Amino acid sequence: MILDWDVHHGNGTMNTFANSPEVLFCSLHQSPLYPGSGKVNEIGIGAGSGYSLNVPLPSGCGDAIYLQVMLDAVLPLGLAYKPELILVSAGFDAHERDPVGGMNLTGAGFYHMTRIMTTLALETGAYGPVFVLEGGYDLTGLSEGVRACLLGVADGPDLPPRPEPDAATRATLSSAAKLLRPYWGESVFRSLG
Ligand SMILES: [Zn+2]
Image (cartoon, rainbow, N blue to C red; front, side, top):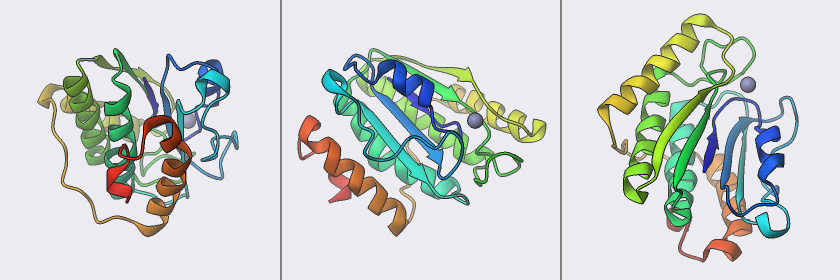
């Protein structure tokens, strides 16, 4: 399983595994933004159908919305998939200080996302999460994000309190769930109704 939380869509990774059910690809990204791909309806191709989750988010999203996506979509899908290895395309250009991205993630957001992925690894017996550094164009924001991840790994599995759901994000996730449920069953995205 590969989670890409870099502010840009993980188009290269998605395209590499789009045809394969052997890698579950999940991307949270700002939209519109370069490269422009990563619409909700990009769920994989052929035998890989159902194995891509794309969550485009408008600029200005912060910790609460990212955690909503993680708890309502990425975590339940990961639990259903049962990965053997979890990789994170760990860009930090969604940090609030970043001059390229327009998002408002803070160190706390990266910390909790890390602990959610660590929980997923524990629950599924997967190796990881293994972080691969990607974008991040403000050195203070980059270092804060990396430090938050390291602290999250050190502190271990834990789920943050569920944030007050944002309606627009819920609508995006519900669209994704509708497209993915045929491949995963009706009960996978239970919290989305
Ligand atoms: Zn990026």
